[in-house]
Amino acid sequence: MATVRRSVALLGATGSVGTQTLDVLRREPDRFDLVAVAGSRRLRELAAVVREFRVVRVGIAREQDRAELREMVGPGVEILVGPEGLAALAASADIVVNAVVGFAGLPVTMAALASGRRLALANKESLIAAAPLVESVRATPGAEILPIDSEHCAIHQCLAGSAGEPGRPDVRRLILTASGGPFRGWTREQLARASTTDALRHPTWSMGAKITIDSSTLMNKGLEVLEASALFGVAADRVTVVVHPQSIVHSMVEYVDGAVIAQLSRPDMRLPIAYCLGMPDRLDHAWGQLDFTSAFALTFEPPDVEAFAALPLAYEAARLGGAAPAWLSAANEVAVAACLEGRVAWRDIVPIVSGVMDSYEPGPLSSIEELYAHDARARELARALVEVVA
Ligand code: NAD
Ligand code: MG
Image (cartoon, rainbow, N blue to C red; front, side, top):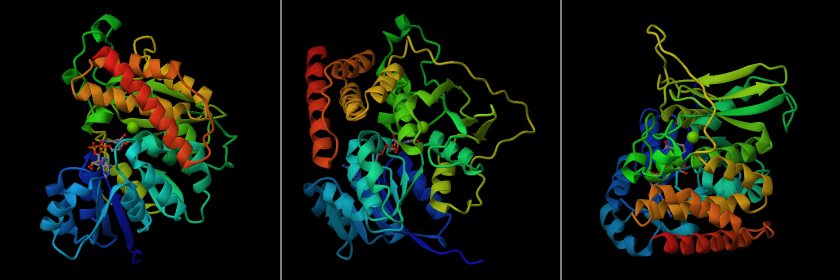
């Protein structure tokens, strides 16, 4: 049976998820047409993608890069700039892959859903910050979110095979697995001396710098609790985290009768990416294939929430609701950026976020303008705390 060709916009094409998405697209030239890409830096790599896939529209973050990119891609390619550019590109394809990092991915999420597209979502920060707003644009006819984040993609797969209504009364809880990051088992005293270089050595996944740091503080798992709650309409207190160092079980769903359904595969992001692109078809590439002919063990342990305070902070943000998750994520972005720039130490990240959350100013979150105001205020407070620590 011939498959229907679908157009794809890949925003954040030069990053870790972006380049792995290109790898999937390269192997499926008959299924997908890459029609739009975007990236913020690495113009040379971006131009190479434009040439390889004959992409007709490309987005960049800064106006000052336009001339240099034009030089590299030639006259026939449309160049769009900034958040408006990202939004226009996100409204222009059947499938929109949001592989931008951070709150900068918001225009992609909102525009893709508002224009009734399939959103293949890696950019968790936009969903977490804008959850109440996403909830309404998600109702646009044709709009759907398929999660690329491996845990959420696993849950999507575990839910697909079962009956149940929206809100899932038959689901008791979602169980997110966490590798535990490079500092699993470290005591608080050891963690106080952890370096950024140590934090950037993830044991099982190779990812962009921001999410790698988030994995080392467990803030990534905290953000994923908020992400799961928003995606699946399950309250955060029904989302549990379990440490599973092998990163083979990508997450699980526990049903009311106690049955637990899990999704297993080797840790390779191309599997969840291909799942989101191909749905309802599974693409025939054995990215996640496990070898059961040799022995291996799967272990599970509870997270150390004393040593990793980011996790309770995320649950607290979920309990507060409203704009609290947006504040948490914004403060974390500022603190992680300061850490990556060497301005604060790794151990300062979570206390900075916690300090911002202590000053949380609840307020309405019913429009994008209000969300930008919350985001700006949280960042301002986080920057002030960075100055104190630096
Ligand atoms: P990365 O830093 O490797 O790549 C980020 C991409 O976003 C780059 O292409 C960059 O140019 C682009 N970008 C950043 N700001 C932009 C802007 N203003 N306009 C246009 N493009 C912009 O990050 P990553 O690791 O690929 O992660 C991307 C997202 O996916 C994050 O939200 C992360 O949490 C999520 N995620 C990543 C992985 C992974 O394996 N890397 C797994 C799960 C979820
Ligand atoms: Mg994940």
